[in-house]
Image 1 (cartoon, rainbow, N blue to C red):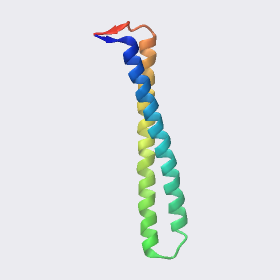
Image 2: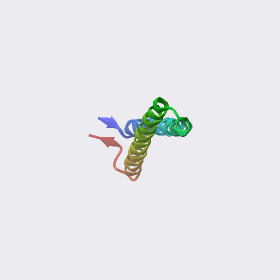
Image 3: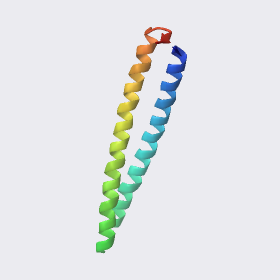
Image 4: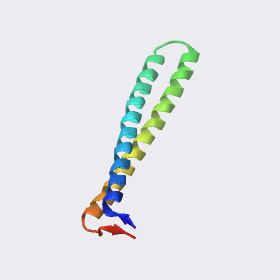
Length: 91
């Protein structure tokens, strides 16, 4: 049997780590956007190519951030469900 508090503890831990990933991906995405803006100011094809890669990385990091936000909301819903009295033990 899994204890109610154990499940809740694991869910809270997962939510905390997902929030950290969300924060890091958001920060990195901002940095990538800044790199894109700086690199596109140069009149050099290779730098513009790098800028486009930075823009793509920024978009992917934004996707990760949104995925984390969605997972965090799902976990929050699970914790609220447990708090409403789903029982003290999970079988």
